[in-house]
Image (cartoon, rainbow, N blue to C red):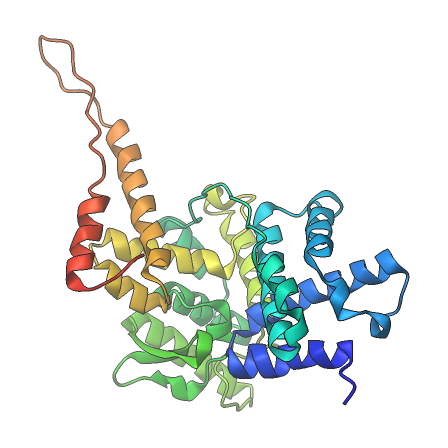
Length: 342
């Protein structure tokens, strides 16, 4: 059998990424974007059509040149550059399994280092901002009732946007006030819901039924089809603009569904919940992903401390001494419990 470049690429996505690795739709979409950019780059470099691509051309030197073109030509950030490199490394590993002659080529590509990126605290919302956004949709309309329930559910669960888009009505247990989310790798987790969230969902379903729309899917678009993650992003942008009129701190801010996920995580941490519980709540595979919210929480406490007035007295007030956050003690305690973070 003559193994074509197209066959290798399609098999990489269908058999390897989706079936074998079980990656999420978002990750597959990101890898697809990278592959299209890489193919376009190769075709332009060698003045060839896609089917004429020699898989051996995707070597160490070409990958470095491609990554350099992303940064200089497309002005991609280092984070984006690293995402593209991760996709290429995965593809190269897949190729070396299919074609053993490419093992050395793969080893060199795997040796390409990811660039260090500046640590940025994940964006989050205040209680006032969340309240303003949830209040923005008009519940007297079918879409407004849907949006209010959806935004409330985002905040309640901290779910990924695709997890919300994929929800069926059967995933909600009204009597027990529980929801079943299906995350990355088809892993499920069950979370409790506030009474208010249940009420919003029931109201939205009632508005949907009054329009004569029946569906197993929980959230639908204006055509009665399952809503997409892009649709959720658009409706959120619209309601943030409305909410900004009542809450000035939202003016000019780009609030994505993922900001709600960060917000829920941070509020859970600040409420004193154990990091292992928050990890399970969010569906994180690695507890190190969850620990970033502890760092953000500590930084917010530092800022609050600096705003405190100095103590009165006859002697010059001493500056409050900032104590190194006891993060290491916390990590040590986790190790004792068996939660390995390394």
